[in-house]
Every structure is written in structure tokens, then in C-alpha cells.
Length: 111
Image 1 (cartoon, rainbow, N blue to C red):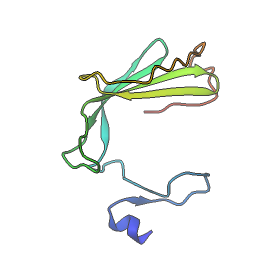
Image 2: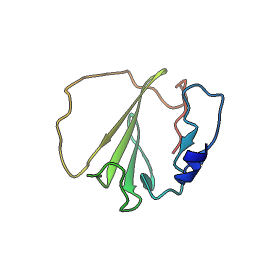
Image 3: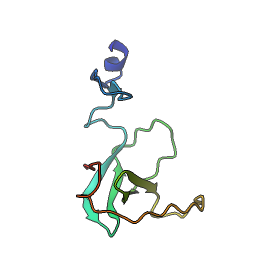
Image 4: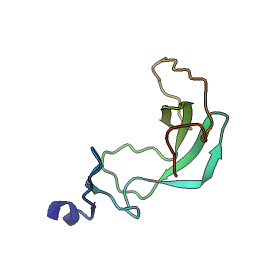
């Protein structure tokens, strides 16, 4: 806990299996923040994310990035992060689902 808080992170113990106890706070200079509101699509949602600040943990950060969330089945959610300004190779894996509405899904998505 001390090492976590010394880095400026938030410590929150939990009984939820596999949930992190140490994480960056919401107002951290690291990571990405949503720009604008979430856009509803035929299969789910699309959100634009921009890098918060010039600080980087890994280098070569891309900004903006797009997050697409697709409701594929009642129990399967697909999300995709990509650079809207530069095309890249993607494994040609077709994962099709009948598509469900958010009300039918056994999970919730919050932004």
C-alpha cells in the first residue's frame, strides 16, 4: 500500500476477484480521457479518447484513439481500440454475433 500511494496511485482493497488494488486515480496525468460524448452505433458505442498529458509510461503513445464497443451476444462484449489517423495490420479474424441491445445483455457498459 505504501509503495502504491508513494507513486501517486490510489489504493483500494476489495473482495472482488482479480480486481486491482492499486491504480491511477481518475485525475491522473497518465492515460486517456474521453473527448465529447459516446456515440451510439448499430452494434454498440464509439468513443474518442485523447491522451491526458505529455507524460508517458511506455512511449509512442497515439492520440486520439477510438474505442468501439460492440454488443455481440448476451454474454459476449467486444471492444476495439484503434488509431483513426493511421491504418495498421489487424488479424483477419471474423467474430460475428447476432448483436443484442444493451437491455438484453447480461453485462453493463459505463463511460
